[in-house]
Every structure is written in structure tokens, then in C-alpha cells.
Length: 87
Image (tube, rainbow, N blue to C red; front, side, top):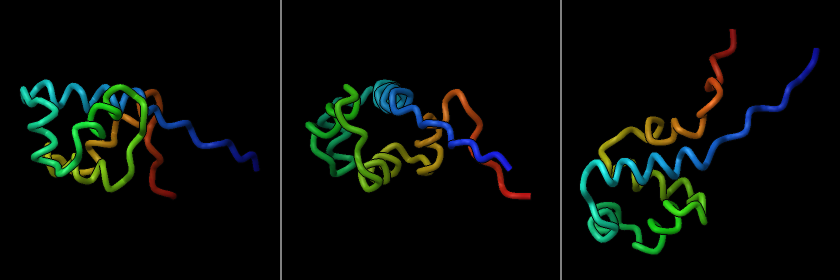
């Protein structure tokens, strides 16, 4: 049996999605910071691709955007299918 490495996540798509979600709502960094409890510096670093952020960071953003965490992280799978359940 050949074992293939898992596909690489696409953090660029995740960062762009974050930026798009903030822009669609018309929120400034300060507004998103107030809604998420994160610092403006963290939000800027994420949008500029300087950090991936922690799971706790993305959890806070999911709540701020009123999205399920899985939906917020979906862009990580850009270009490949998420894993399916074993048969």
C-alpha cells in the first residue's frame, strides 16, 4: 500500500478569507478587535500573512464573525478536497 502525504493547507487563502469577511461587514480592525477580544496587532499580522494564528485565535474570530469554526477554516483546503470519512 502506498501512503501519500496529506495535502498542504493553504494559509494564504485563510488570510484572504479573513480580510474579505472583515471587509464585507465594514469592520475596522478596532471593531473586530472589540468583537473578538483579540488585539489589533494580531488581526493585522494575520491579514498580512505574518502569522497563522493559534486555534484559540481562529475560535475567537469564528465567534466574532458568527460562523462555525469549520466554515471559517475551510479556505485551508483550497485546491484540494477535505479528507472524507473512512469507509
